[in-house]
Amino acid sequence: MAVGNDSSVKEFILLGLTQKPELQLPFFFLFLGIYVVSMVGNLGLIVLIALNPHLHTPMYYFLFNLSFIDFCYSSVITPKMLVGFLKQNIISYSECMTQLFFFAFFVSDECYILTVMAYDRFAAICRPLLYHVTMSHQVCQLMMMGVYAMGFVCAMAHTGCMLSLTFCDGNIINHYMCDIPPLLKLSCTSTSINELVVFIVVGVNVIIPSLTLFVSYTLILSNILSMHSSEGRSKAFSTCGSHVISVSLFFGAATFMYFKPPSTSVDEDKVSTIFYTIVGPMLNPFIYSIRNKDVHIALRKTLKNSFLLK
View (cartoon, rainbow, N blue to C red):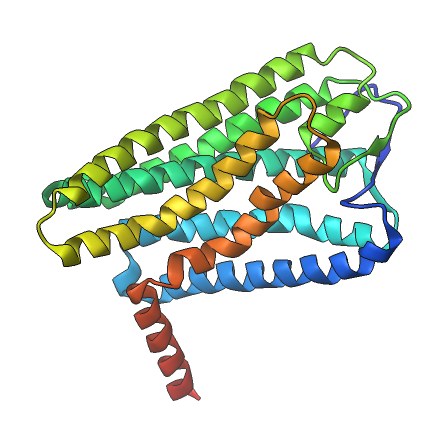
């Protein structure tokens, strides 16, 4: 990404999650473990879905993309965070803007892929006879193109506005990554346009998905409660339950971060950011696979085939 402005600051110092020396090494191993689990879990789910034809359905197509987004998402943030636990974490201006772009891109993608997945469950449970028409392969591809397009637009809006700011002397970012709020605090020019863009973009990314999720799950719940089969209700609740947990974790932490009261401390900001940037991507593969019989069957089949090849 080509970057350039009139800032005298050429690099930033990321203060990291904590400045307490006794916590640096324990936190390094903790987040290294989380990162490894996240990478293995998401990559494993990607490979599992790709190798098993019976998982080539709209639901797993979207889950494949969610795992890909989470895989990239973690890789944008966590490696640089880990460096900060071992030494002074210096990031160049161009690297900082690049990290900001991809962070904004993947966080926006996550908002909309979770929304699309909710619509998919609505179509499967409330309109089962029309499901294969409503969620055809072409429709699913168009939805994913829309997800990535929204991510690109949001990332360009945030990064473009950030590139217009001038950073004069302050170069210490009180965070473990180049996030928007701590960067705005370092600007020596007006940030009013940036704050407006943040309000609009984050508002759209929260309100539209939230309304879609609320309407989808209200209709899904109504449909489930009207089912006569207890087995059908149980299966529907199981299918939707994992998605509700993932949505609650992501949107809860993200909403707190960007619509928090002014009195919120920087440390609370960091903790809330951890939940939707690091913990969420680690948990999603397990949330969607632990009670999923299709994934269990695919895993056994894949492991069996790998042993037979040996």
